[in-house]
Amino acid sequence: MSAEAIDWGDFVAHSSRGDDSFILDELKDADLETSIQICQALGARSDPYAEDILSWLLAGFSRSSGYRNDLLVRVALTSLFEEGQGQAALQARLDANASFLDALVKNIRRFHDPQLTGMILRLLPRMAAMNRLTPLMETGADLVAQLSRNEGRLSTTENALANDYLATVQEIGGADFMEQCLEVARLSRDSVLTENARKVAAKIAGVSR
Image (cartoon, rainbow, N blue to C red; front, side, top):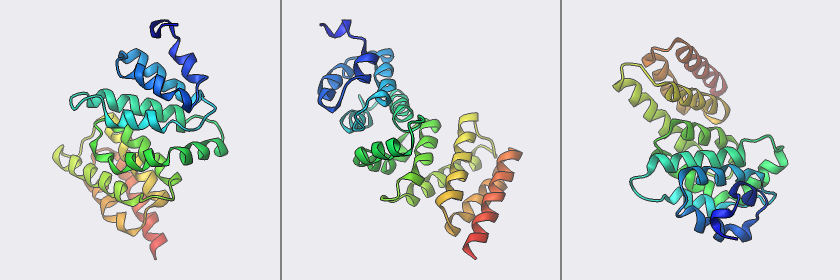
């Protein structure tokens, strides 16, 4: 069967890590539609390991295709880690792809897509074995800088990222994040974000006493 005749969604859904070299060969020359189809199907596999594919996506197709890379990594992450497959299956996927997740977290500042960054933040509480606070602090610093540059305004996706940041700080952060939360509250012109930032700052202040 030729590569052109394959239903890539169905093939990947029924594949395992032993097929990954074949899948990667297709991804290297695939159009965006086929690439998305492959990434969407990764979460349907029974094999939790997808690190070879994920790491290749993270490495990128070229220096100039950042937004495309971000989209494909986000689609793959959504498929693998945000579907309702149950805690045991989710943990198996987190464990099987730990090296990729470590690299993902360490490279959090390279991504252009706020939705992808927010998704990484939402995964942080489940990654107890790695350094989680540095990327969280870096994201907070970037948000504060962006609010300062844009006179307190964020785009819809950036605003969602700010709320993902606050939710993650509330779950795993501590007093070291209080200044950032207060800066978000002070700078933001969005009343909901401002109130949320104040609440998180008050909560972590209470925990640290």
